[in-house]
Image (cartoon, rainbow, N blue to C red; front, side):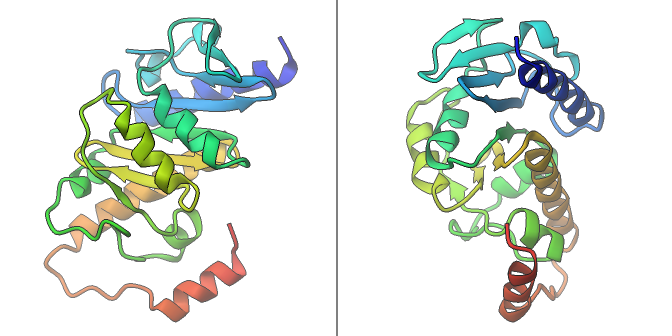
Length: 212
């Protein structure tokens, strides 16, 4: 086992525990993956992110076949759909975080961009957030819906389900999904108040100064 793989295993366990301990994904919900030179590491199916074991993480080859470890998350297709469309993605994180899920259940959302640009950090780390229609858990059609958006968006929100975010590294994917959750929380706190989001010019200025 390479040093890169050992380090990634430890990082998945560390960040999974951090996400779980802060209440960002309850029970056995949510899943994490990271790209290897010859495939991926993923959290196993029905695994609690707070209690992952680096030795039993699922290792998949480039074709998505299990090489070692426990069986991968049943939502592995969400991860591979992202990787297929995003060559620079080093990791993918999917959570059932409370505020993002709450936003995904609201009526009359703009399916092309669910959250307003409330802060510069949201613009920097997430940008736009399209809504993926509801599919039953495990439905392979969900992978196709994600794949259609993943080429232009590194973050999507699954309706009545939760966010899926890709990043150039595992840390960056976690930072982005945390920013998404905080922005969803702000959005709900501000509901009913007159909102002053960033203007299109301000958004453009942020993206010019801090390109993703």
